[in-house]
Image (tube, rainbow, N blue to C red; front, side):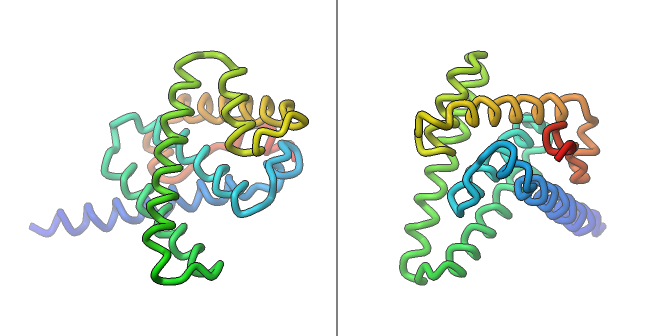
Length: 177
């Protein structure tokens, strides 16, 4: 009779574990040291989006409620972070709408770039989004694109149950560092 409550609690625990793994992987020092992603609020935001993108893509409609729970956790985290950075109560809703628009645009851009199967398209998008379009970082954007593709490959090869449990394998570039 109370299975809905048990399922809800399990789903929340799974979302918590999966989001925690995404945060941990996104904060790996190698992403900032080896891949040269700027260690800034914006750089961390973009890194989180990349990891969420890869996980949502892996779930590919098989776990829509969990996927939504992970996205909700991300935005709750972004709201808390915005407040900690001094964004006032009156500005938070506008800031969250802006972040949601950026998030949605990134999901579409990365999906389109990957469907295009052109590493330069993905690199160009990453260069603009993550590195601010600086010409000197094109090799970093290519490396970050390779990282994303390897992460996607790792996720595709793992059982969905492991992903749901928050067991995200770090791509080799992160494990070596």
